[in-house]
Length: 166
Image 1: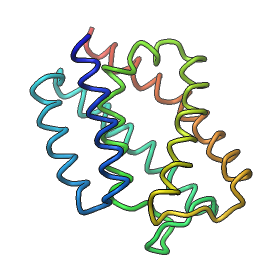
Image 2 (image 1 turned 60 degrees about the horizontal axis):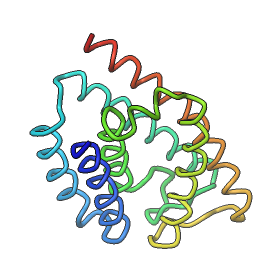
Image 3 (image 1 turned 30 degrees about the vertical axis):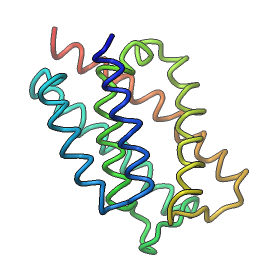
Image 4 (image 1 turned 60 degrees about the vertical axis):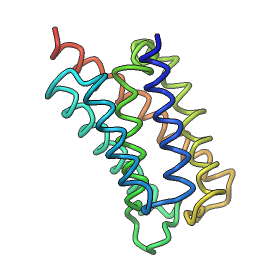
């Protein structure tokens, strides 16, 4: 239980630091989180594959939001800033630990992704240089739709991670 709380706490602290301080702190968050993850949580190459696959899913979704104009990134490009990719790395590290039990309950996980993922972006927009290119209600619906897709895809990645360890 303590490991699950540490894993969740690292994500929450990392989210806050990356959102508040951006690229300047994101790399440090990633390095510290990776060191802790490797020492306490990592179960081999399959973790790296799960993390990489999750980051690719997140990057694709965030880029789609940029291309569609839902989110406007400070660079003016449709690709998310570096610190947002670090958030996906941190989130990916929760999937086999603090979110594993939820990921096994696909419907509940999808609903929680819609709510939690969307709220995370809504809060992030208020705290960063990222802005909405759409009106907030429409942007929230787009975020909810994207996070519903994430809520269906990510449990499948966790399932494959579990099968690779069996």
